[in-house]
Image (cartoon, rainbow, N blue to C red):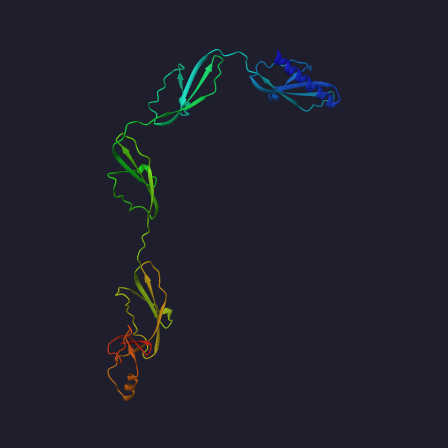
Length: 337
């Protein structure tokens, strides 16, 4: 009855506020609970009793509006109220349950406050147990959680029985090590940084912590070798000659049979290596002259006496050469054929 009286007084206050605000008489009133306007009910008087017996314990609210003699509805007035829980006192615990490591779905019933709980299948380390109880009013207590430790075996290890390793965090591809000094195949690893992880097992069956180290597989730089050479004469780039280079080192064959003799020519030459890169253009000026077979006149003899000839390695020669090759005469390269 006290709960109904609380709502009766609230409705009277709301209706008085509506009448004062609109300066007229009230012709109708209605209310609804918890925002359900579709279930609104009429109020026949400001001191009406509202049945809230079916509402659950907790906070609720009532909304009221009034209509004046001109047919206008007031704004909605809403007030909150509390339905307290039953005041009956629980007298006994009717149920208890627990679960391990937060796995509520695997909760188990406790038949006694001194029950034994099987923890044999838990791994060594920290774990937690959560417990709650239900009273004879059907209410559950708050959850109580406690941590506990399952220690490792107290036996002393005396030897290592197994070792294993894996590369780049790929534990699923771990391999067994047969000794503390072992060769590990890294041939298939790409150049760059990698890591190796190792752990060992003792004669008690316990694994050590994982030790990880980084290492680098360097890039293998391929040594480039000359595979071709190209040359052209007198800036005639439309007539480039390309030839494979077979050695020996620093020696190439150049065909000068189509060039005029006794005049200067310029040769341009580039090389290409096994990586497809070309060298810078090398240029030389030379003259083609036939090999001398003798002196035909005194004037020719005097000219040859004043000429200075050198081999390509800088050695001065005694007069004009008699063999084919490339020489230096008066500071210029000359090809004798």
